[in-house]
Amino acid sequence: MRIPLRTLLAAVAMLTAAAACSVPGADDGGKTKVVVGYQSKTINTVTAGTLLRSLGYLEKRLGDRYAVEWQDYDTGAPITAKMVAGKIDIGSMGDYPLLINASRTQGIESARTEFISTTGYNLRGGLNMVVVAPDSKARTLADLKGTKISASFGSAGHGTLVQALEKAGLDPAKDVEIVNHQPPVGASQLESGGVQAYAQFVAWPGLLAFQGKARLLYDGSALDVPTFHGVVVRHAYAAEHPEVVDAFLKAQLDATKYLHEHPVEAAESVAKETGLPAEVVYLYNGRGGISTFDATIKEPLRAAHEHDVPYLQRIGDGFAGVDLKKFVNDSYIRKAYGPNYDADAASTANPAPITGQDPVCGVAVNDPATASELWISGTATQPAATPTCLLRQLAAHDGPVRAAYVPDTHHRHALVRRPGRVAA
Image 1 (cartoon, one colour):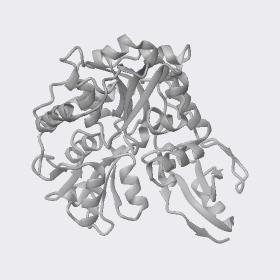
Image 2: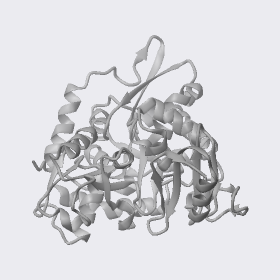
Image 3: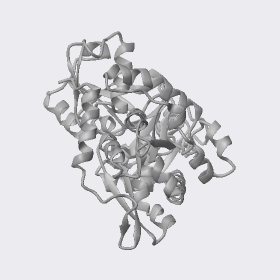
């Protein structure tokens, strides 16, 4: 069934009453409690969630006077609900949920939130996808007319779906039925035939495709609209505990640096924590991956938020709009980042590209548009200058191969192939 946005927002409000959790900032055995809401399987947020938690960087930055409580959710909605109730201090979520978060809190000064840093982004929108069953006859979005499509209402994947359907000439309110599901429920519904398509955010569609349970129908990068995830904090909490916010952002920067310098180990760590295949995590978070991890708040991302507001308003009648100038505040990350902030915020180059020397073609790997990568057994990866060179590496390799990654030059992101054994 269709769920209007005002119903979703009402459900968010109801969650606040049902949520049972210690009040953030309250004394906890002599320690100040810091409550962080995150989404472990939303791997575009790992530098503010799963990876950050496993590395322990926040706890190290804060020291013994603080106790960090991590709360894990499938989507951003319950994080927003608890922030409205003052029961989560810092959270991370996608671009559309961030807008809903702002809309829910901007009229309540005690609950008002601010967007303070980015976790990861893709300038073309490649973090969101629409997939169908492997045997589906659909070849384009237009073929979904009259079908049921699973999405998490108000999510980044939902926002991409609405924009993509309109671009394909379909009315999202009349030509299809968008069914509100949590990501794992929607995945099960696609597999059982309860829905005919599945529109979600990183890493759910990639996981289903990797498992052979779905086929990519539409890649969000075809929209050419940036999509991203970021960190949001309660303004009142930040004013009372600026040292905590500064420590969190510095810890996020620590985790981002670790991700860039140890991408395979980071992917293995996230895989262990979430149960996701490491090959899928690496597709997004590895060298030259679909997601670019950079904590600065870039102008294209600000513009994308402005662009997204009308789509949320069309999704339902409960979205009150957002004062983005009041919501977006880069002063915290600017302070934590240091003097290079402006220069790095102006850059959109991936700080963790695929580089090195191609061992078969014998040339340098230095072009992001063609750079590819082979993940052989264990944690060893090797660069390839072009997809052709990668195929030559595969032909020359006698042994197990975990995955091969090549750039999609049209959509500007990597594709993963399932592992197998390749003989010379």
